[in-house]
Length: 365
Length: 268
View 1 (cartoon, rainbow over the protein chains, first blue to last red):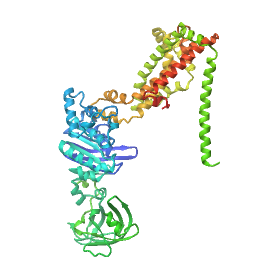
View 2 (view 1 turned 180 degrees about the vertical axis):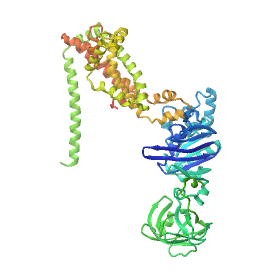
View 3 (view 1 turned 90 degrees about the vertical axis):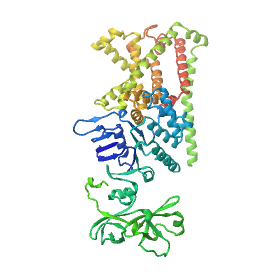
View 4 (view 1 turned 60 degrees about the vertical axis):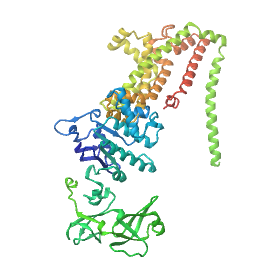
């Protein structure tokens, strides 16, 4: 449904998009994950026709809407692209009510009676009937987000673009709104490209997850596949995995910066270079003098980030390991920066694969 | 001196200064009023010349303000939303009249309409020099840069993404201008109109150079004050000044009840 090939965009000296390729199939939701400033918003602005790329092509439902290199430039105006766009700050028209915001794109396309029926229907689906008469300034963050979604969906777009719609919500509200969005997306079945830097969004919303690094999609697969078999070092890092370049001593043991780890999942033989990854939540922090079978490493806590329920630790155990533990255990065990800790990593949670070729083409799963 | 005392002294001194300069203005106005009696004032106010000056001032200033807004909106849109060769030059040319004394603007206009080929063609069609249309032209030239700057500032303050959103929802660029940018800029455009009109209604220098100061012809309120003082008709001048102050107070009072006051009264 959405096909992007070789898309590049440069701002001054900064190459924001660098030959980006991406396909989104009909009816699926792809969550594009990337750091702040990685070019996610630029990509959406280019797809929607609000910004011109330096090179590359975009096709929507088989129709070429953008071609910026060779063979004659094509740039279909935004109004003819059938794009529904939910930008980061919603950009609701402040002088219109929620109802009129949703009706904005329908006026001129439909008869007044049909506009009214369509808007009423979508407001009902998104549970916004009670606030239809209110202006954006009178709405809560979650309501604004739903009005923006309703406005984008009302025109029945072929592709829905969502730009970090949860980023301006309170942390407490984010989880609930995320669940709502997941429900709406599955009921509308609109082809959706959702960009975010928040991995929780990717877990909750993405049929597939694409990872954007240095202006390219370096991996696209389901979240489980990416977490358990990260195709590249960049993907693993972007997904917050512990990830190391090392070598296999034999078919079951990897050597990373002088530390040996028993690896449960690998098809590599001894002597080969390897990319070794494991998830932070697969690292267990051992209490006191308890003994355990498996990869037991001793290290010192470099830093501890205390969340409400979970504490994230960075530990120097010959290599830097990120892990997490429940806050209660953290307080009980008197763990903190500078303290010594024992870590247990189950071999079955450690994945080793061959180091990817530096060629960008080989980085795709 | 302890910091608390220093802060209190600064607060008292600045408030006292604010009252002092306000008092000077009030005293000056009261002093002017003392030059006439209420009877003379009332009879001057209903005189034919004063009524003519009020009507002419209102009609020319409203016309020039309408023309200025009609030009300022598209020009401000071009300057705010598009890049084009010579944009810097256009902005410079539009800014110069803001700095020039109005009398110099009037002199330039007088020379243009009197001695250039284009100016003479326009003069033969519209009869501008020493005529009522000259008042409109002079006022327009003085206020057009102000209105353009205010409208452009209003456009600049709005994220172009609003128009972009309108375009993704089916609007052409011109529809996004009329359906989104103009409604969102209502306060800015209204404040540009109020600022422009208040400047136009009090315009003297450019008007007197281009349209002259002919009684009961090109006699606007400020020109009328000038004419009356030039023949030592102080009660007549005072009556006009009272009317002008009254108009200013009414405008400010009316503005305080509109959202546009945020721009005009705060100077933003």
